[in-house]
Amino acid sequence: MSISEFLAKLSDLLWGWPMIVLLLGTHIYLTILLRAPQRKVFKAIRISLQRDKDAKGDVSQFGALATALAATIGTGNIVGVAIAVSMGGPGAVFWCWICGVFGMATKYAEGLLAVKYRVRTADGRMLGGPMYALEKGLNMKWLAILFALFTAVAALGIGCSVQSNAIAMLFEQNYSINHWIVGIATGLLTGAVILGGIRSIAKVCSTLVPFMALIYVLGCFVILIINSAYILPALKLIVTSAFNGQAAGGGFVGATVMMAARYGIARGLFSNESGLGSAPIIAAAAKTKNPVRQALVSSTATFWDTVVICAITGLVLVSTIISEPDASKLEGAILTHVAFSRIPLIGPHILSLGIVTFALSTILGWSYYGERAMEYLGGRRSTKIYSIVYIIFVILGSGINLTLVWNMADCMNALMAIPNLISLLLLSGVLVSETRKYLWQGNIEMDDESLETDS
Image (cartoon, rainbow, N blue to C red):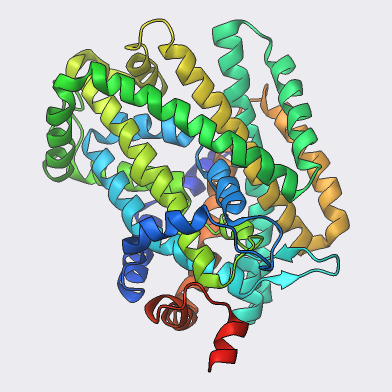
């Protein structure tokens, strides 16, 4: 058995039903335990646009959110949803959406622990994430080291190689530009941003994320206007086929309820990263008055990523399938292209722009995750070497066979989730205590010092 075959089997094992049940179960458990923090989503959005003056941290709450969204909103939001629909039928969209709704509670919990257990370095920077929660909150440094190792390796795969390959292949297929030229250009652009540190990354992401999301969503809305006669039938089909496996337009003959749930939940988990432990690393750098404020802001990343963008993408795809029944037989990427081709002339270019900007933002966001994981393992000096290696992987990713890289990245992502979920479950008492102190008792605008003074 080759290494690639071994990793493929390991990936299937790690991302099988046990992992899906564990992740979704954690989402539901934390939703109940924390009294559904999803209810505060509009308050959370409002906080994300505010600046906590004189608060400790490296970047604004919006900057941290934008960087997290940059890493989270990737090609999975476009092609990933199409793959879920192709493999699991229209019902997969429903389960993907449900996963996002419950996943907001887990993303809230991750952000809370990240700020609660963050540390200040000698040069004044804030560092945090599951590795610090595991070490400081649970005294499990060995597990913290494993999480950091898995993160550093995963970033080189799903964070950069896979994304740069998507960019290079798109330019080569659509615009006949050699993939190595695109890879080098992407690598140079990445280096110019990430070598400037978190403030540089956050600044670019704060501009890029709203732009890319706006262009993509506007394109989706244009398609929905074109498909207006099929929107209600599409919504009905998405809901009904989630529970009875109904096919669309004669396609998806093998789509069952179990397949819809499996592919929808898996794509939702993979897309929003709730439970993987990546987003808390940037949440720890936010300038925030207290852990709960940033926890609320962090939860909006899953809201925007899955509850909004993935849901809109799914509705676009299913309404297109109903209008063009033969589209149900197409594979994920081709199905997405057919959907956007319904916009005359500029549709495919909007899709191309979406894929490029989504992939580039993911490269930038994951570079920060990988560097902080490497800093935890080997100190600040090791991050400089890692940054160079990361840029090299961006360039190499544009032209290599990605089967091995994909399988390795999938394995690392699953292995990241296990120690992160352990920290969330074993520190659930801390989550309740902090949530009660700031959210349930109405102290969301206060910090620890103010609360101590009042008491």
